[in-house]
Amino acid sequence: MEKILVLDFGGQYDLLIARRVRENGVFAEIKPYDRISLDEIISNGYKGIIFTGGPNSVYDSNSPHYDPAILGIGIPVLGICYGHQLIAYMAGGAIRSAGSISEYGKTELAAYACPIFENVPQKSVCWMSHTDYVSSVPEGFETVAFTDNCPCAAMADVRRRIYGVQFHPEVTHTEYGKTILRNFLFGVCGCAGDWKMDDFIEKTVAKYKAELKGKRVLCALSGGVDSSVAAALMHRAVGENLTCVFVDHGLLRKNEGDDVESVFRGKFNMKLIRVNAEDRFLTRLKGVCEPEKKRKIIGEEFIRVFEEQSRVLGKMDVLVQGTIYPDIIESGKGDASTIKSHHNVGGLPSVMDFESIVEPLKELFKDEVRAVGLQLGIPEKLVMRQPFPGPGLAVRIIGEITKAKADTLREADAIFREELERAGVRPSQYFAVLTDTQSVGVMGDARTYGHTVALRAVTTDDFMTADWTRIPYEVLETVSRRITNEVKTINRVVYDITSKPPATVEWE
Ligand code: XMP
Image (tube, rainbow, N blue to C red; front, side, top):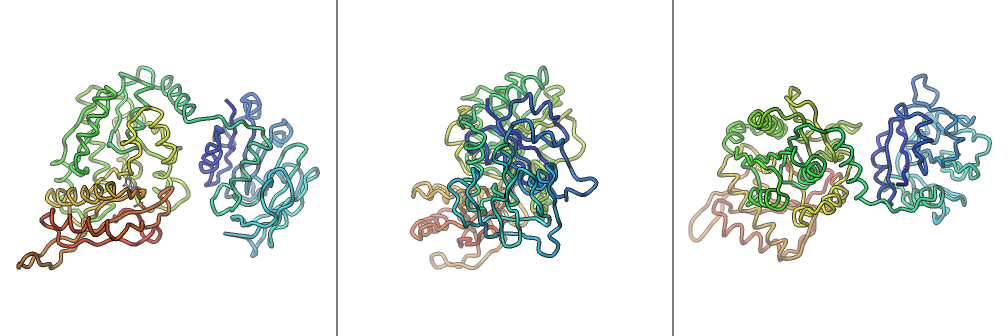
């Protein structure tokens, strides 16, 4: 299998780079620079190497470096940001601090003809983020792009197939970033681009088959896309040794519990335990209004339920979770600051009875997780469905949670989803939120004092940013009429027209 090595020097975009490579049908492997030797690189047969960015300056005494011999082994290299400066440094060039004229953000790039700029216009927009720059290009290299403030925005040693770019081709703000990466992968490295998600599945299954041999594995199944895919993947790896525990915390959508049960017990014939824990969760959530507290409680309670189940089942060694990459960065594990603690990352209690936690999807983005799910044979209805947060309706009931409120929200939410599906409107995520507001209404001749429900629908690729969906008025009208007619305690329906940022997708 052809593969690209993403040599990580501590930047925040290593996974994004790998994703961009994989999008092109080429497998990308990420290795921290200090965990792979030059001999291993040579013997692993990589088609190309990408040096990532990093927060340091190459002259810092503790900055990450690599054996300069890597530039002489005949494997093409693309250095990005710090990686670009590192190549220059290793090859005998010079780097200087840009001081007050450091560049950050969208910048106009002027590029010369060069294999990595094939089909890239002479002028385009790129995304810059740096304080240092290459001030003297090493021997054998030539400058192939510049910006107003950066004399060497890209350099190339075409003969040795070594390239460096100061900007970030992996982020969408770089207009021709995808083209540049494709040029490197196909034009420079000669990749064929025939890697598919099957390869990810094969590799992951083989890895866990070996690592978890003889271990008893418990999977936390929430019924959402991520944990479903994680369960099916691990089932393939450890078969009968996997037991799935599906916790119905009473904060699921209408009919969700039964649907999950029928797929995993019925179709996949997995060992599935459904724990009906509504009372226990609602009791712990009583009087709790603060969103992060709700998440923490639910996260803890989940784990307690699993631990109890594992005691009933006998000692379980490993816990599987469906954490995916955006969960990790949004929870502040990377360099991004904490926004919300997703229950399956930030809310984990520190004392746990398991030997280890396995998160087989933690390097994948949502669309990749879906592709894996389809390959594994999970029904399309489940795989393609919109994401649903682990804490469920708890973060969609503003203020205190009660069973009556959850039931009310479930009905309104089911109507909203049903009508959008009927109308063929498919936002990336759409749901109802029970606000903490009650207001006056009139029904027949009587005054009412009922709940306000908010409808939320967003369109997005990656859930990091999202636009509110322009749902046709007629559809909104039908939804509003049906909710106020069919759900007794709701007398007002509003539509949320805020994008992310400044809002988040969920209200809590
Ligand atoms: P936000 O609200 O952060 O949501 O813009 C982005 C995506 O993440 C989902 N989300 C969660 N998923 N546990 C989860 O498993 C959580 O606590 C959680 N909070 C938000 C949200 O539904 C959206 O898809």
